Structures are given as C-alpha cells and as structure tokens.
Image (cartoon, rainbow, N blue to C red; front, side):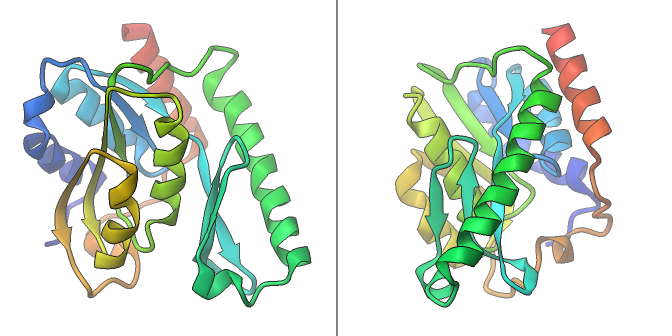
Length: 211
C-alpha cells in the first residue's frame, strides 16, 4: 500500500477509527510529521488535538537508526540489541541533546498553556509509521502514566517487530498495513515532505482556538 501523502493516510485511518466518532477522543500526534494527520483525525472523529512530545535516540554515526527513544519526562526505552554497543558517554550525550529539543518544543508548541489532560479519556496516539516502534512506545508510556480510559495506537504502516513491541503498552492497535519490507517510513508515501515547526504551531493554534 502506498499513500499519496500523510493526509491521505489520515483519512484512511479515520475510517478504521470510526467506532470512536462521537466519543470525543483526545488525538495526540507525535511531532512533527503526524501533526497534520492528527488534525484530520480530530476533525473526522469529533475529538481534541494535541501533541505528545517524544524523541528518537540516534545510534552514533547512523542518525536515521533509532537505538531507542525518550519522552519529555526523561523516561527512556533502549533497544538492547543496539544500545549494548554504545558507550555510556555517547548515550548520555545523545539523551542530553534530545532533551534540550524536547524542552524547546514544549515551550514552542504549548505557548504557555497546559497540555490537554488524557486522564479518563479515550486517547488515540498517531504517527505516520513505525519502523522500530521505539518512538511510539515512549509516547504510549508518557500517556499511560496519566491513566486514560482507553489508549489506542494508530498508524498507517508498521513493521511486525514494532507492533509486537508496543502492543503491551496500549489497549488497541489500529494499523492499516503490517509489512516486513520496511526500510523507512517515507517509502510508503508518494509525497513525504518534511513538516516544519511553523506548520505544527499553526495547526495547534487553530485547533485550540476552534476548541
């Protein structure tokens, strides 16, 4: 399956999530790529939109390879097969770098407001795809500790490994395609342009003004 772009993927996800229409779900998008998708889902399902701040931890020398991920609280997941070869010094340096980005995004995206509270709500965490599942796992963990009523992972495409990794952390996984032929998320999109911070902020501001 190949999607025209993220919005096309979001429209298809919205159909698979239609059972939640009318339940006023909280859609939490992983920045930056999934934020336009989250906006579509929130509109189609009659829910609220916000972001969940997590960052991939890059393997030294291979920035596209995730050796793990961390949330804004500092909670960290490490892939044991990859992180075992990384020195404590390199790991600490990468975590410090990503934590700085997370704090900057917290200031930039929330603009002084409080993040929307997941407690007691049906929460849908969306991303544009899962290769390793590390980033989604960190996102789910950060929401799970807030005691949502139901926690759902929603992605257009994922590897089998990623699905197995995140399943214990949520109540339901909605994935349109699970495939072993996974090199990078962008291979499943005809248009996979980068989403910029300005676009994320504009979407969030409009969503909260309308809300």
